[in-house]
Length: 468
Image (cartoon, rainbow, N blue to C red; front, side, top):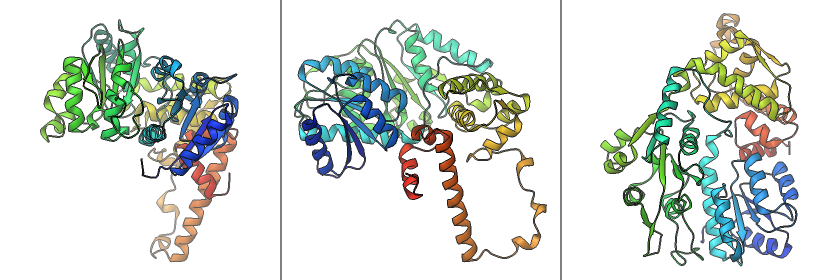
């Protein structure tokens, strides 16, 4: 791999020699690296520095690699974890992948393979960075007829083996629906493996789906099972399946039809027993007409279609969702219980919530952390709404046009006034950063969530404003 990589990797290994060699290799490839000798040091570094990927040894005294994986998944769900493992622990590493690890690399590691694996993890993390998906908080919540219908269809689908296609806007809970199908199915004791198809380019997506044989390409130093094989006996969730290329669509069609595959670079046919659940927000029917999505694959996926309604289509669910998220985030952030008044609820119901349940959950987490009172009325909700892009407070909070003199709007702004506005914008942004850090107790991951930005963006801004 000759192209320069960009990003920051945290190396966790109790052997300083291994960390030194691996750090030098990644640095030569253009990456920034930090090293930790144990899990506790790694978690402290994650809390204080921007990290895009974690590479951890499996066997370490104290907190081992699997425990590091669990802690990173809990506290920094957007940071992928790659495990380093000896030959004797390959089955353990495969189980770790089923539990959420991004990948594993065998020791002694091959230079091209570790670079290839880190590149995959970086691309996946960058592809998912904008989604800001909150951690799962349990089963579907709501009292609307629309959600009752959805749950009834999911329950019937779970009992069978047919492929399920989840449709709906981003943030409506498609991954939660996929997990609900798995958990209610006869395969509940098998693995639930997920892959975000839009996060990787074709070449990497293909190897991630189907696996590869040793020597299949530069960096393929050992045989690797793909996500389809890892899901054997369980469920494979393909998120954003509408974004995959025609070339990958052909191979996916064969797997769904024949329940068999060939790894990249291999000739042996591998039989798999997998239940497929796919999701997309794309209009697949239109993509079929445009020739961008195979019609035969569409029909294979669309056996049991389930449409998840947008939050604006089920306003009756806003109250139970809001109360649930307030309770969850109060406990998570160590705050006492919150009360939502009728006018506070009315302010929430008046919003269109274009980001759906995901946006509502993120908004309420910010409200829990930033609020100075446990009684959330209309003013408290509207005050926070006014600070969020894409959300609209009540007109009463806006400055009326009549309050300004008409002459103030007649002249075009000068360059000096434009610079003044820009400096004011930067000062407000700086104050928002400082306020979020204070409210989050200097927890930068939480501060990024409160501001609705990625950790990487937060660190860039903190450096820009001298707040690091």
